[in-house]
Length: 197
Image (cartoon, rainbow, N blue to C red; front, side, top):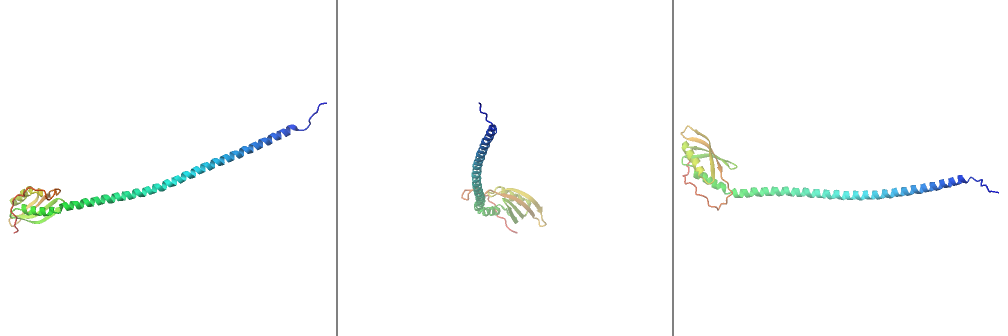
């Protein structure tokens, strides 16, 4: 006689399969969680290392900016120092020039002419004076033209005053003082010195 199994074996098999599935699902979830946590830790470590490198770079950039500011400050100080040196050198070169200029003024001033004021603005000289006649003023201009230290005479005003003389305003340029003092210069024209009235 055949044996008939009346136990609910299908339900037990189904429960067993469900149990295996739930265990596998739990294990897979745990592995996935651990894997995600490991990836998170790796990325967190990479981000932290990159932030540390960024901080180091920022501190180095600040240090370099400070050094650049110091270099720019030194460069500006150097330019100011060079400008001062150039001014001092120019003043040293032009120091004897004023003596030569005054000597030339005296030599170029014709007889019967005297100056009431001499004003210098840069290389430009202004002469205010009185002459016995306008021909004396013309002679003064010719003498300036032939001078080594004065050039470009330009007559501004000539007006005759009541006493028979002429008052005048004349401009001239001082020549460049870049040539050394020991260099021989052309002899100045022989002109008699002017006297005061």
